[in-house]
Amino acid sequence: MLQLIRKIRSWFFDERYRILHAFNVYKIKFPRLIIKTSVSIPDSFAFDEKIAIPRGRQAPDGNHYSFTHEITWSALPLSVQKEIFKFESVLRLYFGGDFLIHIGNIWRNIGIPTEFSSLDIYSQVWHYDHVFDYKNAQLFIILSDTTEEHGPFEFFKYSDEKSQYAGVENRQRDVEYSGEVEKLTGNRGDALLFATGSIPHRAGIPKFGNHRDMFSIAFFPKYTNIGEDANLLFKELKG
Ligand SMILES: O=C(O)CCC(=O)C(=O)O
Ligand SMILES: [Fe+2]
Figure 1 (tube, helix red, strand yellow):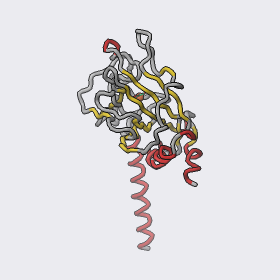
Figure 2: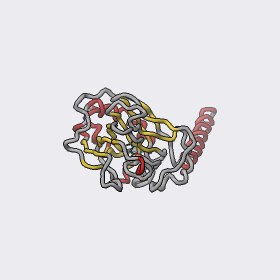
Figure 3: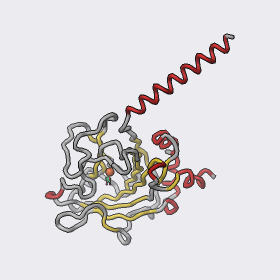
Figure 4: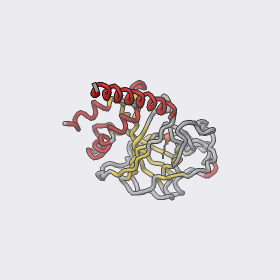
């Protein structure tokens, strides 16, 4: 009898916890996912200007200031595939289940003339990646040593999880932000798993003459149909 009462009691607490937890999660529209890591990468994993195409918008002077090329899952170094696989459980928690992996990109940003710096040219104004919706994440890997002078990736360090920042949705013009900003400076191979859909972020602008090379690969929920099923891509790694 006592056993049965214990069982009912624990069932009741478990259900109550799950319902309250679900409500709390529901309130979090802009979850913060920020994990710094580092990957060892071969020299061959680098920006290749021979195959790069213009990225972002053309500036009013007719020039592009960012160039990119794609890299498929199977062309990624094993160390990068393994690093992504390491985050499988984190990403499953973030998306609430199965997720998709988009094709990777490697791009080079160069300095933008000051007169255009507040126009959205290569995502260097504060923004959320509003793609299908706000649920997406990316792994960024720095491919060239990056200091403040190289236009590092920047983000709101303590962003609000429940409400959207006014003005950040409108990418036509940059907004002022007085909170703490963190930057992805570091050495080649330093990386960041980041909720691009729900934390305001932007590219920094390299000082004239500098450039910044970056790799990124994006993750999306299944219903978006953006990318390939992570379970399939991970199959070989699981052995
Ligand atoms: O290049 C960067 O540092 C950020 C790029 C970005 O946020 C974007 O393309 O949406
Ligand atoms: Fe972005």
